[in-house]
Amino acid sequence: MWGGHFQEGPAPLMEAINASIPFDRRLWREDLAGSAAHARMLADRQVISGADRDAILEGLQRIAARIEAGQFEFTTALEDIHLNVEARLTEDIGEPGRRLHTGRSRNDQVATDFKLWTRHAMRRADELLCGLQRVLLDLAEKHAATVMPGFTHLQAAQPVTFGHHLMAYVEMFGRDRSRFADALARASDSPLGAGALAGTSYPIDRHSTARELGFSRPMANSIDAVSDRDFALDYLASASIGAVHLSRLAEELVLWSTPQFGFVRMPEAFTSGSSIMPQKRNPDAAELVRGKSGRVIGHLQALLIVLKGLPLAYSKDMQEDKEGVFDAVDNYELVLRAMAAMLEGITVFEARMHAAAGVGYTNATDLADWLVREGGVPFRDAHAIAARCVKVAEERGASLEELPLEVMQSVDGRIDARIFAVLGVENSVASRTSEGGTAPVRVREAIAAARIRFL
Ligand code: ARG
Figure 1 (tube, protein in one colour):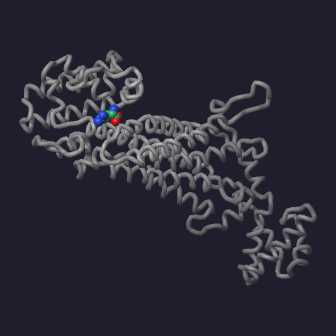
Figure 2 (spheres, rainbow, N blue to C red):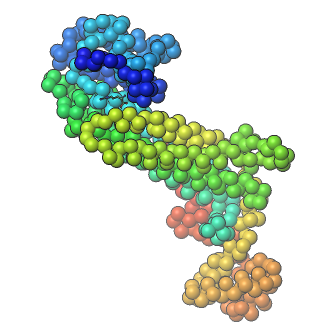
Figure 3 (tube, rainbow, N blue to C red):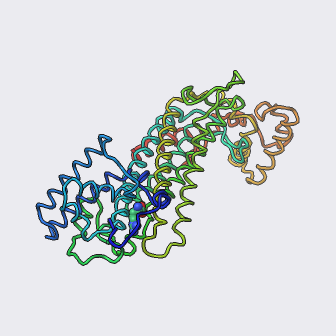
């Protein structure tokens, strides 16, 4: 393609280090779409003839059919998807093929292809996140009133409902969706028409190619257009945060499915056994959701580091942008699907959650709050009284509600028999009716509101 002033072909090692076709062939649809838009625009602007345009469009369609059918021979000698397509097109249709690259460079071409591809991936992420939210909402609905222990420091803190806990993740995935939406909006200007870096002397129309490709406008600066990979960073950053959310949920599933917690059973189809320990049921898929977050985050770091020292405009280092993004997209989409499927098949042991909810004096705050409400005791004093009751109960190996009234009254005379009504875990969650709180009435409202916000 550029042999004019070269005497030798590339060394085999040059071909090995230089070729991107083994991975950038994934951009073939976007590459063909970009070429078709460019050819149409060139003809509209009378840079090429209508006959050339028609030959090119027809040739591109034949190439699409061949790639689709697995009959296109990609070759590393032609470096990348752009040269593979252009060479084959020229082989097929002759001279019109040699006119396609007028007013264009592989620099704006690859930026356009990759940006289009990443925009599709952003839209898919949104759909998958929405699907996961739907599964979580259905599960939360079933368990709006299922009581479980809430934790801080992984120590039993206060009773909550399982539905409320799940809704925390619905919120996280909602923010992930908004990050992808922002990224998509920021990536809505087209690099095509920037040429190698400086623009072109042909009377091109960048607005029409942008529109045809689904962008809203051309990028404003030709140097930026060929140097920018922010769209890829935006995807990776959004996916990294999203993968961290998935990893935290996966970690909870791993914990909850241990015999020691016993809150849930993972669907058998997403677990494995042990070749030595007959009793084992390992939550492999959840562990891999947790583990793959490291991989996605790693790809973000890798691309940031590739880009950080690059002078404007294009440098070949930028060819290193694709594999990490492809791998991050594949794995992020995989864990989103796997998480939704696991949650759909999960068994929830409500009785076990309920029993655990009261363990560890999780109703101590309720005792203190009762003293404030019914006895007019300042909260700090009530806190100290409840703490003394916990100490007495611990010494007796009892729970708070198992303490005889006289014993509680010996700690503070203002406690009376009505206290027993507030010490149960059901009462505890039902009382937390503040906005965003865990009371089942609030959780049901939150679910209804989330269905409107997110689905
Ligand atoms: N294969 C290259 C890439 O992926 C395409 C752009 C090549 N541009 C160049 N000036 N050599 O980045």
